[in-house]
Length: 443
Ligand SMILES: Cc1ncc(COP(=O)(O)O)c(C=O)c1O
Image (tube, rainbow, N blue to C red; front, side):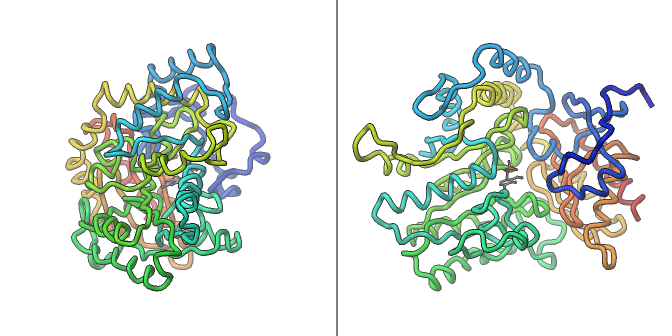
C-alpha cells in the first residue's frame, strides 16, 4: 500500500451519510481522496476505476483541467451575486448555451442547485402555468412506478420508489402513477429499447378517464429510469405518452437529470427519441459534477404565459439563493466546452454497441437475472439472497471497491454502470471484467 494521500478522519460518527447504511459504512469505510479523468484514488492510495461517473454526473471525467481552471478563475473574480433582481453575465451565457442544445422551442432556462430542486421547480411551473392561463383546476400530477425524481416532497410524491416514500407521510396529495415499463419475462437481456411495452403508455388514458383532464397538470417521467436499475423506454412508449398529453392538454416533463448531457449519446434523451417534452429537468452532467447545479428548460410558450401584468411585478414567485451561482455557471460553461471540443455525446453514441456487448458478457455469471443497456448505462439484476434483499449487490459493491478497484452504483439488488463518456474501450472492458469478478467472488 502506498503512503496516505490525505488524512483519514478519526471520527466517522458526526456525518449522517445520505442514502448509505451508516453503520455498515462506518465499520468498513470507502474513502476517496483524489480523482483524475477515469479514476479515483482512495485515501490509502489505491487507484479505483470509476464505473459510475461518480453518481451519474462526471460525464466529462474527473478534475478536467479546463473545468478546474474555470472554477479557480471564477472564485477569484466574483464569488456571489444574488439571482433575485440582479445577475452576472455568465448566467445568461450558460442559459443560452443550454437552450441551444435543447430541441425545438425549449429555450427558457431556470437555474437551481440540484436535481431535486429542479424537479420541484418543474412541478411548480406546471401548476402555475395552468393557473395563469385560467385553468387552475389542473393540479393533479402524474408520475410513474419505479421513477426517481429526487427527494423533495414533490419529487417523492411523483416518484415511485417505495422506500423513499413510506416514512414521510402523504407528501403531495393529488398524485397518480403510471405503471413501470419493465417486465423481465418480456424484456430480459435487451440491448437498447425493448420491443415490448409501448402499450403501457395507454394507462395514461385510463388515469385521465378516472380524474378528468381538467384536473391534471402534468406528467413527469425519466426517459430512461436510471436509479431503479436502468430501464430504457420501450420502443414507441414516449411517443405515445406525448400524443396522449397533447390530446388532453397535459404538460409532459422529462426528468433528464441522468439522461442529459450525453449519457444516451445525444445532448438530451428527447433528441434520441425524437420526442419534445414541454420541460426538461437537468442537473448532474451540466457541470460534470464539479459544482452543484440543476435547472429546468421550458418551452417558449410556458415562459410567455407568465409575461403579463405590470412589468415591475415578479412573474414567478420561486427561486433559490444560489440559483445561477457564479461558480456553477463558470463550471457549466467550461463543461459544455469540453463536451463540444471532445465531441463526447457522439463518442458515447459510437461506444454504445461495444459497451452493450461488453456488458452482456456477464450474462451467464451466477445469480445474474437480467442485463439492460442503453447509451453508456447498464443495469444488472442479481438474485436476492434469501431474506436479505439488497445484500448481494451490497457485497458486490464492497468487493468491487476493496478487492477489484472498481466503483459501481447499486440499487436494491441491481448494479448500475455508467462510466464517464471519456472511457476508452479498454477501460469499459476493464470495468465489466472487474464487476464480473466481484459478482463471482460475492457468490
Ligand atoms: C432522474 C433524477 N431526478 C432527480 C434526481 C435528484 O437529483 P439530486 O440528487 O441532485 O437532488 C436524480 C438523482 O439521481 C435523478 O436521477
